[in-house]
Length: 539
Image 1 (cartoon, rainbow, N blue to C red):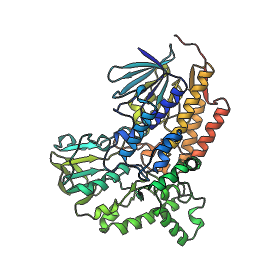
Image 2: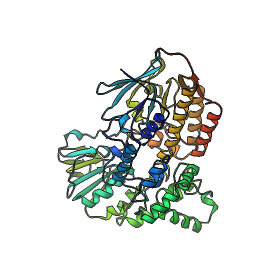
Image 3: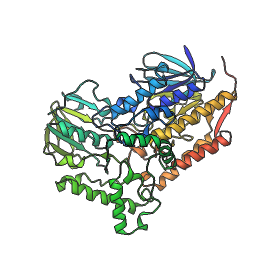
Image 4: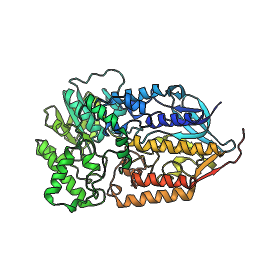
């Protein structure tokens, strides 16, 4: 059986960089990837309209100046094909593919106490032993489709957005249903409205959406961006969540009504997440502040949607602004003014069944050729739950987390030696511009493993006390946030999955600066909270 120093599960951005960093330390490393190419999210999600909602130049790798200078982004928020091309270019440049096993799905990883190794088994029968196991499986990588009555009887094409057909697929003039109106659903609806003969948008929970304000990047602009990369990455590092947006230092009620309205207009007109993540600093904790921001957006929706009844259906009533993921849109609301687009809200018009020819609602039957499910993912812990990860004394990770994840920094969990998660639950990279914060986690893991190698240490495991304290900090802070009191994938709620009806925060809640400072202090105190030993193991 093959034996290596380290195995990485996943070859998206985090897995690619982790492979690069561990190889640079002289370790033998293999990344195992279920897809046929690098890219992770940007390999699997190929639906029309798929693009960044972080600025392109804040989402890219920051560790290689040459790559930064040679790559030109065409738009402020790059579309999926461009991002996928960028990641393939990075794989070429750093010769990553030679150490990636593609088209291979890991099914289990069991700790072997007698040898101090992880035994990793794959669906195709491939097995490998490794001293270190790193998961880079993403937080939105396991698609979920509701079990609608009659779903399997549909005679047309139906698929989740993350399983978009790889071959050319004719949508022109078709009768299309898009089920779901989260961030992905919004992107898909905007594009389907351009080509569908009839588009039916099936909505359960409307979301507060904000204009993306995308635009091309001219050559001169790109030159300017390249000259400012240090400044851009510094701004991301100093922000609360790794974005080019940070909270306004004022509170909502520090200013007059007129000044507040002008501020909202300014943020509404700025690019990306500005209205969400550079709003007044009390937006995330004060219900009155969130209500005022939502009222502003509701007015915008009513202005943009001609039919008042449709506009009201598109305004969220079940959550405050900023407590769920905020979709970015480009003329999303205007699509509902088109004669070929209809909105069906299943709260007032329930979906009864799917038949061979279409979808039956309480109000009647809608014939459909194609059903596109933009119905989300088993978020944050889903990919880890799918893996049969078993640590010391036969303890499975899924069983340990029955009552919710318990981790130290989101990077390790007690009882699982030499097992690291780049973006685990409660990690600083879960509520963040993921590449910015994941780069830090990758480097932290690589440096920790380097510390072990340099000092003859064979095992590293978070202490129980450290993970209990860290989890308590994250959950206590979640109780102070409006998002922590809201049903969403942030808080682990997914009514399409058994056992996901109890609210328990899955994301990190304490702000990037606290996370970075905590990590720095832990290293300075000789990796306080990580129990490292040099116990001999069998050869």
